[in-house]
Image (cartoon, rainbow, N blue to C red):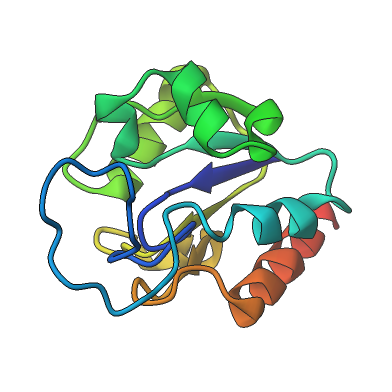
Length: 151
């Protein structure tokens, strides 16, 4: 079972504070730092030991997979791949990765970008509000979707 994982707008709000940024990001509406929601997602996945992660975030363009795994520790040990930047939408990149990897098992995506998702695949998307990222409701929905895929 796979979790296609976006970063911005999911693991932290889109305007999360980055203490290491070299550019002026402008005022932030949140005091949260980047990757602030990683611990909550890691805890939510504890009962789902079978879930492996494929990174679908645009961060994969700028950073090697090993560095991405470190940035999302303790989730890093679950990461098996990144989708690559292979499409005009996140869904297209995910679909391309699934086809290339010849993966035909169950999967779900955590993402704040729902552009390009066909109606018949919307059940695979757990949408996050980009202003907050993961919250209790979203984590509850993810848990329900994973449980449904097990049946």
